[in-house]
Length: 142
Image (cartoon, rainbow, N blue to C red; front, top):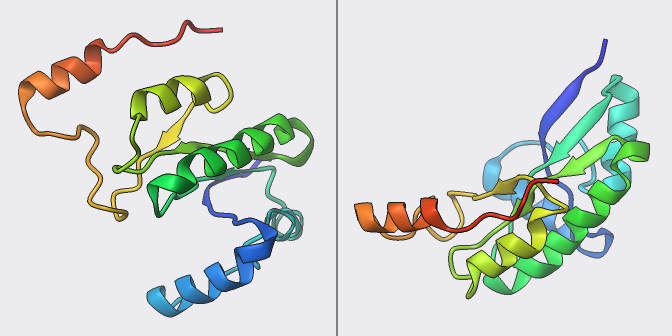
């Protein structure tokens, strides 16, 4: 039987301990891993999980390209590690459409994390904004 863990988070090794400590204090929960990719892989092996999906969060606009680069790197190794990643976006990121286009080929999915910065799927609430968002040209499918 194959088991997919569809909601995981990882952090760069150099900040993982601090990020996990902060999240643990804020959420009053105990983490299952140390927050690193290797910690997730070890947890997967111990639990018999076939694949995991990382849902990254950018807590500031400046983090978006760096987080997406890390997500692309995870996806490049996904077949060997069983770890795949969504891309991410932050509501204050200056050129959302350009970043989405740049990331689309390597991260077919995006995480718009609602608890960060009051993100809404459509920035602006008018019907015209929603129509514009739907009519934005999309990259060709592979």
